[in-house]
Image (cartoon, rainbow, N blue to C red; front, side, top):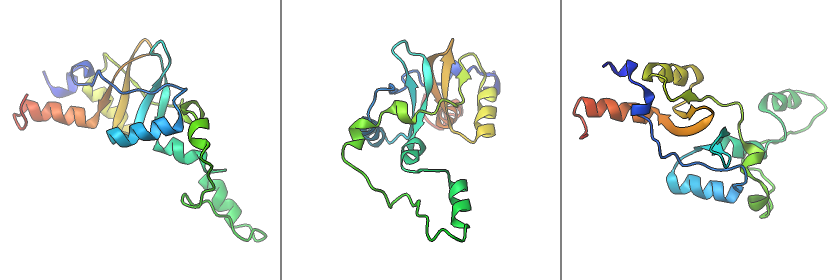
Length: 163
């Protein structure tokens, strides 16, 4: 069978690390650092995929408005200086416990069904410029598929790495 026709269920990681809407910012950042992973699926108690959370969500906490609005405001002659740099932040220690994943979850996410083929998943990855897809079955998270998972499978097939 060609790799393109292979169902993603044979390649995906079924042991996806997840977070819940109640996960605090502190817990999320610790998990990201520990696993060196920058995106996690967000699930409820029934394992329903609610969305994804990544470092961009964390950055969005500190931006009062979008970059495009910021650019427009900067061009206004009566505005002296608008500073929305990521490093010029005013933070309080309480933010780490008060901000929850629920506050920054991306509910406009791309996922793929478990019975999809590698070709379909790769097309979605290219189309949306992403390298990691939540895999669902009846809205329940069943795993994650990364571009690396696909490469590892191919490398094993060609005996580049051991099976």
